Length: 252
Image 1: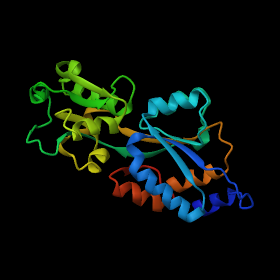
Image 2: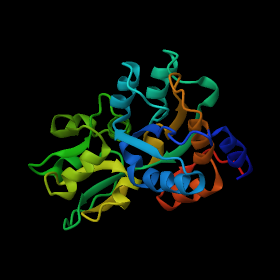
Image 3: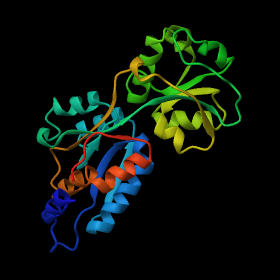
């Protein structure tokens, strides 16, 4: 916590009307980041306002001037998108977390599938749809498409995809029984009792799932740097691990 304690000296103790720290974060982080932000507030007295959506949507909002102090993307590509436009502070960027993909079904489903090359995913769908985040732009969907392509089954299900706005929306489609199967992050499945994990998708079938974090170039809130350090401290790391994430960046 030494680095965190040093960073908190950036706070404006004399300013009774300190602004909330605004974080734009991938939808899959909602539950755990709310808990981490609560811990940060208990330690510092500083409040965090988080906006959750698909990384693609959030990056585009930042690019069009939406006010945010930190951005946490579910893949490096959308952070690159902002960095190439000088919209994040390059020195502040680091890879924060990792995740993995799972195939899910409604909790009441009895479907069984061994996830391997050529597995009968299309047959298992029956007349239903495969729920996943939009594979053209949303990280969870992009990772999912890469995995199914590697496994040789994407062509069989591409026309059967229910493309959701983000991973959490795909999760709900399955939890509500509106789709018999879906592909989401393992951490999403862990917080939704309405689904069960059919199987873990082999990690070698898709690029490593990495969540980079960075301060935005437009941020003028000095407290944001303290939050950035806190996200990498031991206390926050413990929260992320409990939620099922792999911690990639941590300070003492």
